[in-house]
Length: 332
Length: 267
Image (cartoon, rainbow over all chains, first blue to last red; front, side):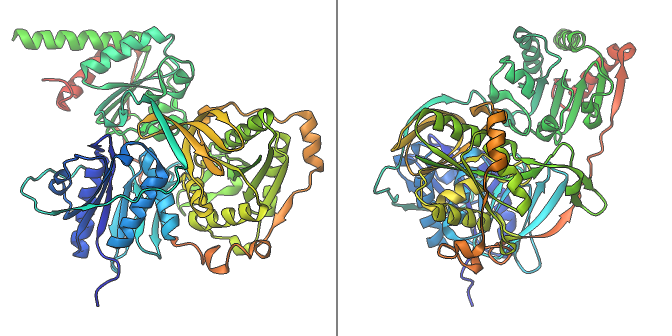
């Protein structure tokens, strides 16, 4: 007997026509799960006219459902919900993955509730058990425990953290179908998105190097020194909540539980003591360097490399040494 | 206007202890407090009630002891507290919880605006707000950092979503979830503390909600997601090399070498 629900569906998030990279990470994971289950990978693309949906096939989808309409040019969750819900009812996937971005975390619960199915938030691991069911692994209680969660209902839905899985490699030889779907439009306009006031300057979660400053930074102008080091390392600057609250830098750069979670190759914490709120946003980084005058600062407990000294000495030193080093390299 | 604020009692996450051997949370190790984001939700409601004529009702699902949190909300400016408490509701996941909360809001009746925090610090899912909106069949806006206008028909907000800030106008009834940036929650006032002490906290049980819910949709039975196993993550081993002041110069040189090895800097 054929299963009523089959396949793994990935919600491909886009903003103004460009696809969010978390979608490619989800497609990679979806392929892995689908191969174990011997089923297809679907992708749901809700977006404006003119997106090259083939990209999702190159990244691992077997079939892309493209709901092509300009109503998706604004983040209006009820419209997204209505369309994603109707697509899921048609496709009937056994698993549905949505990126745990701000839109994903706002949209997925609405879709799950309307389908009366379970939803697990912010997964960091996904596996298939011996019964072919999805095991959803998520950190809980300030990441002190990992919970393994299963859902009794279909589709088994999860939101998945950005930067948790690797992007699936692009393969232009991959074949698949693109199915255009008509958008379901709302009868009444309940939410009017008047305008975008501000676009996030940067998504620091994308960066492979983050040089972050904390309370040790005395004034806003000194961010220039942090920025210079970040630039030399082809990275971006980050900040602890304290200096964002001080107004030294915008919230887009805040690292921590209520800011951005980052997982770069290199994280340099300058004058950051390491409050639990901050650690929750960066402790998964590959290599952590801490510079702080206080040897008992908790940041040293999560660091690979610590320098107990003044950041106002160490950072200019590092900047000079890197510059000198590159000069030497050129003169050789 | 009638405003319902959803709140949850949570352990103090800074003090709470974990038994790493057993992988369980020792809830007794930390006192209960109101989820910090929910205080911002309450403050949002109280500020609206100061601008336009509005009644603020705080609703929480939890054990009978959660009435303490509801009293604290009255001390912080709410008009009324309602506790949803029944053993039948035990073991509810986010879907069942949202369904019960939505049923209670329907029971309370004529609610124009529901306000919730963006997430709780213990569960950290952020799912209950949008799920309640869906069960109530009303629109919602998440991550609201500012309210620019509100009247009996609509609310205009800044929503921090989609890697940007969007100005949205939402027809009421509706639900919003708020961030910590929206305001600075006030402390309980002396006058309101007195009021809170005397306030009667109404309790809604399963029986009270039965026209809006059924036994299959609440508690453990009504919860599709089940925790099958708890695992204590391995603490990532760090080299933990520490250099003191005298060795700073050496440490800097070593670091630059590490950056080169990691191909962050050109060799």
